[in-house]
Length: 203
Ligand SMILES: [Fe+2]
Ligand SMILES: [Fe+2]
Image 1 (cartoon, rainbow, N blue to C red):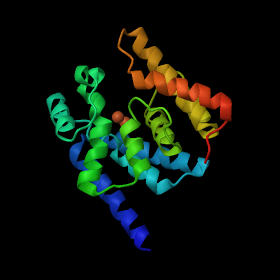
Image 2: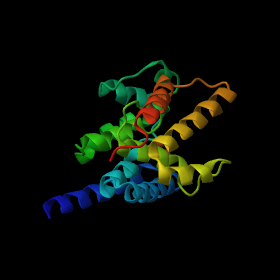
Image 3: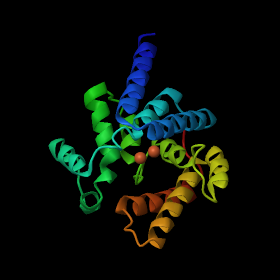
């Protein structure tokens, strides 16, 4: 009972944090990702509340200014690599996770991991993080040629959907001559190897 009340409070606070920090448009995206992630949780037998919490938080730091990202990351001792120096908005996941920990007291390691890893992916990411990564790419307002296939795949196999989505993101950036974050390549390699070895995501 107490746990349930605590979860509801966290969900409400995460929603309020996102609403207060984001434009209408991005808050709308956040709610759609939360609904999509909730659906994926039901399909794959994951904890719906925890994934909704991660989804509500995932982009909460997205509208922070570039200089402020670097300042906060520095102040909070978050890892800053060359890609993050070049494009500080890559820090919006790690900064959102840290905000959630500091301001809302979120201490669920898998929820924080999902928030942290949602932009580039991370090898060995757990099912919650995989589901959030995929939900972010297939929420109902996303429109690109392969999105319907990805939506269907996400209900079948989260590993395969995340791998497909990463391949797409990497191709997209390569075609535009943009750098590929090393974590994205590592995640894809891990997913491809892991997927052949294990077949499916473990619950
Ligand atoms: Fe994001
Ligand atoms: Fe997002």
